[in-house]
Length: 96
Ligand SMILES: C[C@H](O)[C@H](O)[C@H]1CNC2=NC(N)=NC(=O)C2=N1
Image (cartoon, rainbow, N blue to C red):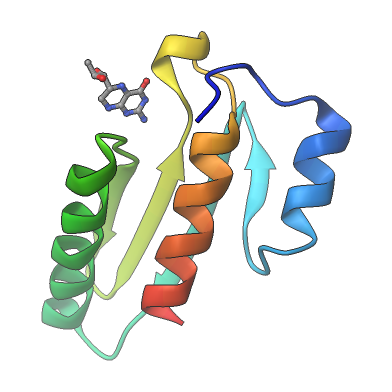
């Protein structure tokens, strides 16, 4: 998969297929809210397995019952690439 940064138009197009995700500060980001803390921790663990398979690792932040997934591509100068839009779609399919 390409490590080239996506253009703003390409990111907007990708976001139309990624409900709940936003593009802020050169990252794709989405927060999920769960029934409790352990559900958020379990979700983060599942996302971790997906990330290891891809060798592409979003930042995962847990705040009690919320999990925020925030992804950019370091090797593209911390910009959004197809690796991020693909990861976002896969994480959404898992957690929604
Ligand atoms: C060497 C290895 O391919 C890189 O460090 C991988 C690992 N995980 C990564 N994760 C993210 N989010 N961006 C990267 O550029 C990246 N690169």
